[in-house]
Length: 449
Length: 124
Image (cartoon, rainbow over all chains, first blue to last red; front, side, top):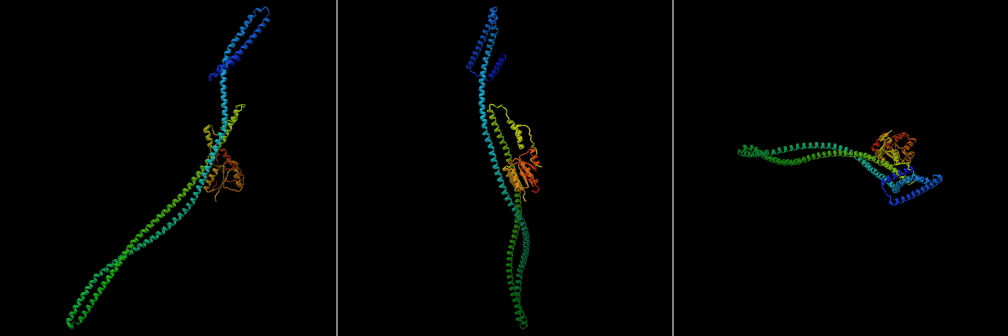
């Protein structure tokens, strides 16, 4: 009885605790029905006990004999007092407790039935959702796969474009190389020609200088001759005047000779001859004057020619300038030719750098392969997670399962450490989950054995 | 005469990028998508001056390829470089034991790759 009472009290405590926690949801009608049943059972129990007492009383009456018969009623009363009443009192107390217990148990049962129902419903929903994770994970898996394929396709196009760019650049480089060769040849040829031209120009300039000197000398000489010829004209006038005076003197002498008669006949011949000589002198002076005039005309013509020569000299000076300009142009051409060669050489150097940078870019493209491998690892993990979730769902639906899990997310995560190929994967793992790396990724990226 | 390099990788992007890089530097490039294909090429008469191989490949991986190449007559001393994402020390040691000449962890710039090639191929 004590054990039963203890259990009853424990039950009450638990029920009370449960009720205190979640509240009393049982209805009054339910409680009345349950209490009526308990009362009936207790009443039937009391009747049985009473029947047993009556049977005991009759047994005692006949067993004790006639001497003790008067005490039967008292004995029975005492017996009832000592046995039945405490029992009834105890039952009464227990009935109250039982009633409360039943009330609370009912409430507890109602409450937990609801909770269990909700849990079962939630469990079913959870199982269904876990099953739905399969298409979800499959879609994500395929998304990653498609992204990798697209990425690979695009990277291949980039590589193709780089290849085409390099092919074009190679063609350009060949042309540049030809240009450099031609430029060098042109530069050398130009320098040789410029050198030759300079020599020619120097010779022409020397010749022009000599011609100029000669011209100036001729011009001065002609000018002097013209002056000298011009200075003869007054002398002719003097000669003409002398001839005329001589002629007059001869005429006078002839007159005087005639006047002297025979004595002056010889003198008359002389005078005549003198006059004739004077006439000849006058004629000669006229001829000389004419010739001087002719000469002066010729000198004027020569001077005109000299002036033309002067103009020509001036034009020769312009030619010298032209030659000078030509030399400057050649120098400029030589300078530009060198500059062009430098530009072409610089373009060639830039091409080398471009090739180097393209090569670097191609090296960076390797990231796609690195990324692909990391993403493939994630894909494998997604498949692993999908399978694990499905197993969990099946386990949850199995009423015979014992709750033990062979594989857990924790163990799966730990197992990933042995699957990593790259240091970066381990670093990411440790940054998120903590712990220490078991692999040695500390050696250099490039290692020759 | 230009030297020939056999590139072995299952990644098309790797094969294409390496081919472009090495061609730019004046090398002739042969390719294979896994170890077995590379081995078949070598057995059929291809005689590269250098092999650059990935490690993790389908059909036949790089480690197995290195071991089998070293067993082929005439390929005992040919330089073999691994170009892989594997950076773990134990893998490197295994590669060295099998006969790899060097270990390069992706990504490697074209410039560095050519420098390494010139080290293992002095005439290049």
